[in-house]
Each structure stands twice: as structure tokens, then as C-alpha cells.
Image: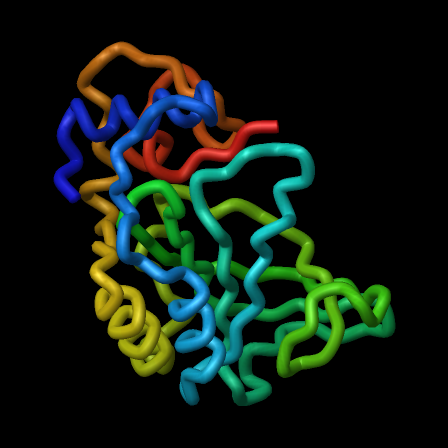
Length: 196
């Protein structure tokens, strides 16, 4: 998808009014198959949080990927564990994605919350920032990034680079989002927004 002014304005219109008429950019993309493929990838485990936005609206699904080896674990206690990983933002209104390094605390909760291969947990959410785009914990994460990228691009989804997402918007607009800087919007804000 071209990051043209016309296309970005359509995404922004959706951020301000979820009933806005946008082109069906994601026609033919089966997100459930993407989740299944990511979940079965041997290089990493995933934790998807499609409902962590509460009553808000988001243009993306946040998928947290950790290595299967215990080296992802940074800290462990009775109440939570802290892990390092890759956060994948998979846009649900356009065939776009990005990822970056994050550390995340995982709080242990009721057994009917999110079930993953690690057991029952609820992630304590933090947002990916434009400065973290395409960053990794270290070079040993190359196979994780390769597996993640192959699955996402194999479904016709473009992975956006830091230079593309950090570009300031060149037109006047307002975006209903709580993630970025509301005075200096970037392309990132037009594609990956969350509002409450």
C-alpha cells in the first residue's frame, strides 16, 4: 500500500470516526491464519492481545513474540514475570505492519484469561514507539525476526521501516490517538492509532 496523502487521510478519517468509509485495503487477508502461523512458528511463542484496548478503538493488533528458550526471561516473581521480546503491530485496516524490541511484564491472573504455551497470563501493555521500530534485543534474535517477517509478508502485508514511520505528516490533520505526540504527527500515528 502506498503511503500517499490520500491513503493516509482515509486511515485518519477512520481513527476519528470508526464508521468512516475506507477502502477495503485488507480484502483477502485472513488474520486468523496469520495468528495460527505465528503461533505454530518454531522460533518463538506469541501472546496476542486483541482485546486489551478496553472500550477504545485501535487500528492494530499487538502481538508479543518471545524466544522459546528461557533467555527471554528477565525477572520472575510470584505475581509476574518480566520478559524481552519483539512487539508486532499488525494493522487491521490496511495491509501494513511493523515491529520492535520491547520488555513486558506479564501478570499471572485467572485461568480463563489469555491462554498461551507459557500458561495463563495477562500482559501489562506498553506501546511501541516510532524510535523502537525494527529494533531487536540483540543479534541472536535474527531467526525470530526472519520467521516473523516471512509469515507477515507471505500474507501480502508490508512491513514498514523506521524511516517511513518516522516521517512527519506533510498535511494538516488531527488524529484521535493516545499513543503519539498530538502536536507533531508522524506517518506512524496515521497507521497505528489507539483512542479511548
